[in-house]
Image 1 (cartoon, rainbow, N blue to C red):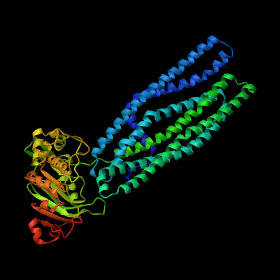
Image 2: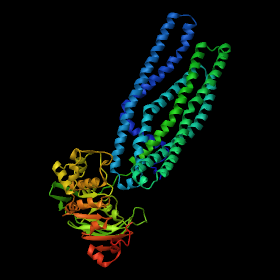
Image 3: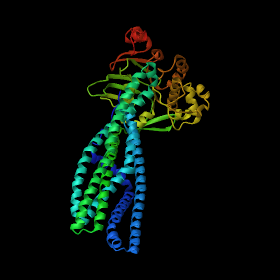
Image 4: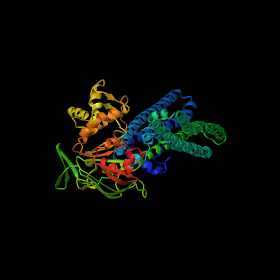
Length: 602
């Protein structure tokens, strides 16, 4: 029960990911240009300030020029102050750029997710999708706030320091190059291990998030079957894997600085010894040696900073690649041209070129074949006909294809063969948004949003008035329990309807469907989670809701569809029986066996 991963576990195409990220950063190009100038100024200030140690010693300390020494110290102090100010503002501007970029990327990701087809959500773990908005963006933000600026600054310091050291002493610089190669060898080994464990950490973190989400939502099921010990053991395994991966990642990341720091001390001692020899025997001035020693002392610092931040940057790039992988997912394709005209609330029209066709609700499925996976058919040669006032029910075992039919009517999925028409118009010709405006669905698993009771009902029609909301609630027989709530229709609900019974949540879902005033109504086992008393309470309202509408009912309780005009019995994607309750009972076939309990729907 591990979370499914989306995207690579580490950057597989770093170049492309950087290009994608740069396209967002480029929107703040003038601010980036300002940051670059400030970083150059800040880095140069540090390098120039260190070089001024040479004239400070040679021209003022050696000659005991106190006045000149004080003036030179003031100049050096001013240079460092300018550098500090430049570093302060470069960091502040970069944080602003990072926050703006993250905001834009997060908005684009959320907006794009709204355009993705249902297939995407059916095949990807919700917890793993959530990790894009949490862990991955957090990693990118950390890179924007610290790593990117530090890497650029460190690289500039490294280059400028190297240039100044060559000017001061090519011999000592050659020694330093040898030490740098040793450092790079260590960085390559440690950074490679750290990057591997950071990728593993992200992978396991997604699994932990998915596991926690899944079992918090299913906590009641866990307790019913007394699986707390099993769940705890599985979680401990995942948690231990996360701890181990995090330990390895952080250890390999943090060990870099002390290793490089110790090497720098060795390098400093060697440089001082050889430099002393050059001063005594080769005529190198003391000021040059002092400046060089200071450069050599700080030379390892930008190397250590870059190596340390590289791992953070790699984690950010891995997260960015996962985000861009979703952004590059193809949006739901809609090639429909027929639109819906709702200017008249009593009569809607399909607009097909110059033709206006009244929206009635005639639905036909002709020889429809469908498969989620190629060569694994789910529906085979399905023929269904329905019109306003007709209640069509589907029954059959789990996996027979009942819900799939309703998903095809909504065009959540596209059929393989055959045709589905709405008022004689192929549904592929109708714009998806307009098609779905005419259809309301009540699902078995009710999802409510944070907000008031009225807001949740009005979700079916955002333009509905308060009176229309109340009318819909009365139609679903939800008005009674709503009035008994502390604040009636303005009662705030959270946590997907926390504090409401399953039956009450289902009644709100039915009211939400009613307020949309649909031409076609789909009830997907809408009463399976409601007790017999509540079922009896809403049966009259349901009949009123379905009156004059084309209705499709997927039923688990066969007693709820006895009054259906047509009952279709499905098995392995085929309709094996059809008729009303009386005719099917007389036939004494599969429906008769299901109704009398000789066969189980599951």
